[in-house]
Image 1 (cartoon, helix red, strand yellow):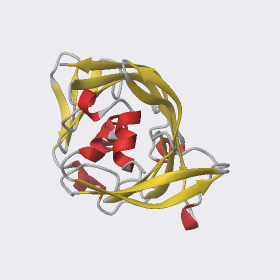
Image 2: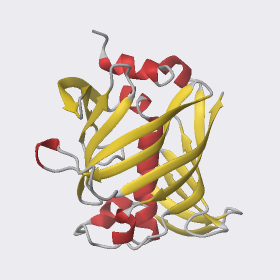
Image 3: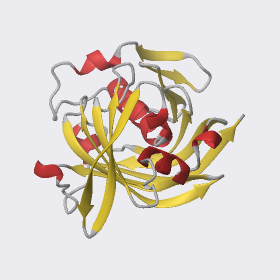
Length: 241
């Protein structure tokens, strides 16, 4: 049997090819009841999201309104005008969630940090799993709705902004990511994140629809319930060296 991480890397476009990538630009829409809870019910509508391929950086425009953009970079977030003038910043955002519960609202910078690091994680996976600071091992397979998936358990160093330290990634027999499980440390929820409707963009394969639902006992996902997060991707542009 092929090493699961190697299989996944090849299926999504190949690690050698990814090493030549500078960044990925996406046009997407974001919604879901999580953002209603956090008092950002509009989510994002046809936003431009630019993620760096090899360092933790995400730019979102417009954010939080037309004429401004939000930037997450290496553990910091800030909002600036389109001309580059600083509006506000949060240099240690992870600390800004101390004492939070599921129903605690977020200000714009807390919202920006969550989606900024999350987008960077999502849109660089599975290549992120092959980077320094991430340790992976294959664990017991999982069966769901008649499908059997191989499961990779990844442990992230605390130097990486991510949802939680230990996460699970479920791949089909071709190496395509189908499901991603985690606990959101900053949003306080157990999540099962499904990846669907894959398309090829310049040699790399990305899901164009992502749906996150609550995960309960025995890892059972509430797929019949509401979506805490929905991401619909219109276009993807891969920039190379």
